[in-house]
Structures are given as C-alpha cells and as structure tokens.
Image (cartoon, rainbow over all chains, first blue to last red):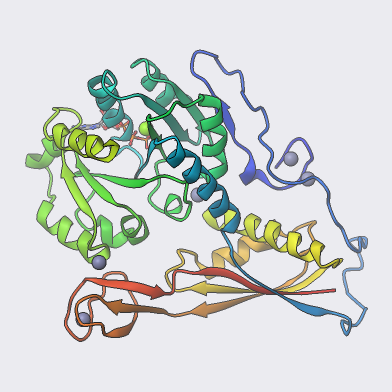
Length: 271
Length: 113
Ligand SMILES: Nc1nc2c(ncn2[C@@H]2O[C@H](COP(=O)(O)OP(=O)(O)OP(=O)(O)O)[C@@H](O)[C@H]2O)c(=O)[nH]1
Ligand SMILES: [Mg+2]
Ligand SMILES: [Zn+2]
Ligand SMILES: [Zn+2]
Ligand SMILES: [Zn+2]
Ligand SMILES: [Zn+2]
Ligand SMILES: [Zn+2]
C-alpha cells in the first residue's frame, strides 16, 4: 500500500540507503506511478452492473511487450554505461549462495587496479552494503520491500546516486531469488548466476529461466565438495542443456581456490 | 510474485495507450503468454485483478492467449516445437538450438470506449 496516496502499488516502492548515513532515506518514497486516477465512471459499489451497451467500443492494437517499460529503462542504462565504458555485472543466485562473500573478496583483491562501484539489492536491511562499505568501495543499498527483484529504474537511480566514474566496474548484487530477477533486464552487460554446491546438481533444470539468461555460472563453495552429494559434471551437463552458451568457473569464495579464474574473467571483460 | 510487477507494467502501458486514444475505459485486454514467458497464467490473472483496481482497466475482461514455443536447431536446422528448456532436437538430438518463439509476454490489443 502506497502511504503517500493510498493506492495499492506496493510493488513500486523501494528505498535507497547509503551505509554510514544510518537509516536516512535517500528517497523516502520512490514514486514511479502517476497520481492521476482516471476513474471513468465512478459508480458506488452497490451498483456494479454495467447497463450501457458497448456498441461504441473499439479495438486498439498495442503489440507491446508487457515489460516494455522496464526494457526501455534498461536500454537507457545500457547505453549510458557503455558510453562511459563501464562494465556492469548482474549477480543473481538463490539466497545465501555467496554473492556478498565473493564480492568482498573481489573488492579486496582487485580494487587497487580497477575502480569498483556496488549496488546491493535486498528486501530488507543494509547489512550487505555495510559489509561492502568495509572494503572502502562506494556502495548503495536498494531495499525492495515486498518486491523480490531489482528493476532497471532502481539501477538507474542508484547509478545516479553513486556518481559512477568512467571505466569503472559496476557490480549489482540482485535480491537472492532464482525466479523473478531472470525477467528483469537491468541494462547489465553480463548476467552471472552463482550456485553453491550445497544446492543440488539439478538446480538448472528446476530454475531454467535464470540459467537460460545468464552468460557465466559460478559454482561456489567448492571447499564443501567432499561433504556434499554434488556432481559438478552432472550439474554442468544439465545447465548446458538449458543454455549451451553458458561458461563455468568453479571456486571457493571462502578458501580462495579458483578466485583467479574469476578475476581473469573480469579483467578480460574490462579490456 | 513478479506477476504483480508485470501486472502493474501492463496497467501503465495500456492506460497510456488508451489515454492517447481519448478513451474513458478499457473493457477488455488481450495478452499473449508464451510457454516460456516465465509467467504463470493463474498468477497473472490474480495479479491483474488487484493491479487493475481503480484504474481504467477495472472490471476489464482479461484474455490470456497461450502461445506455444518453437526452436531451430543450430546443427541440422530442423524447426521443432519445444515443451521444455531441457528438450533436445528431435532430429539430431543436439542441445544446440535457438528458441524462436514462446518467450514473449505481449499486450496484443485492448478494447476501449
Ligand atoms: N563453506 C563456504 N561457505 C561460504 C562460501 N561462500 C560463502 N559462504 C557462506 O555462505 C553464507 C552466505 O553467504 P553470503 O555471501 O551472505 O550469500 P549471499 O548470496 O550474499 O546471500 P543473500 O544476499 O542473503 O542472498 C555465509 O555464511 C558465508 O560465509 C564458500 O565458498 N564456502
Ligand atoms: Mg548478499
Ligand atoms: Zn504513491
Ligand atoms: Zn494512488
Ligand atoms: Zn520479483
Ligand atoms: Zn538438430
Ligand atoms: Zn548456439
């Protein structure tokens, strides 16, 4: 429920937070719905039958993608980021696969040679942004509230707020969710899906949309392989059935094993 | 869950179009739902019900039109209808194919007055 106007557009409300600025909202109420309510015939609720005949009705061809609004903003983001030669990466995974841990390591190891900026997406709390903040990299937290994914508008506003510089690397940690973020283009150059070996090797078959739309798949927590029933080759075979262009990197964000492959991938994309 | 965001997008998009056409009300809407659109019909219908409240689409008839999915094999160029992302080409059993139809979620048309 929108508390400015009382309309039911709860999904369009989100807040941007800068860690260190406590709970001070950068945009107390991010509105992207218009407030004119075009009630054509406002009958009182007791007489809800429509007596008028509809002879005067006509058909209007639309032929537009239902997500066109998001797609347009995403394209605008993409154009802006490309013009500034910024590498934007959308990190997606189930909750807890290790997105923030991997980012922390990456920022500590690479931020002396590359300029990073981070957008953290979570439904609630600025915990992840606070973790990133400790590495000294500029970060903004988007709290999506009841929304379970980032959208292009949120990224647009965050990028503006971050005052991102040319040639930077923008890491966007999406809300932990393997379903909806697949449908919302943010304007990123690459989508990277992270799966941890504690999740089951048939994950790609269960959540095909995310694997279909990703460029790279990171298999994380490989330090736990001796303790779990995760067949890496079987996982890859299933994932390639869903998306035969998918690339893989196996690593452990905890032990550091395989991190160099990930770093090489980032460096290759920034060349 | 994402069906609700999508429903809001549909409301915004169709209201814009209807206003441009000087309409007062949207009586019906035709939406094409591809097999691989990532949207569940029932969830979308349910989301549309609440997203259309107090909009030009209130009480509009929601027509969801299912669209099947097609793919073309990159190896043997066979065209086939596909049921599942994990399907293989029925001719050569390759997984290297491109989906050509079925990912769309399109607002086809609206009936206005
Ligand atoms: N053993 C092991 N644990 C890991 C590894 N990477 C992350 N973890 C642990 O997994 C848990 C979740 O890690 P996060 O980095 O917070 O995961 P996330 O994907 O950011 O989670 P959300 O933001 O909540 O979706 C933490 O307890 C991490 O310490 C790893 O490589 N090995
Ligand atoms: Mg996190
Ligand atoms: Zn509002
Ligand atoms: Zn309102
Ligand atoms: Zn969502
Ligand atoms: Zn074939
Ligand atoms: Zn191919």
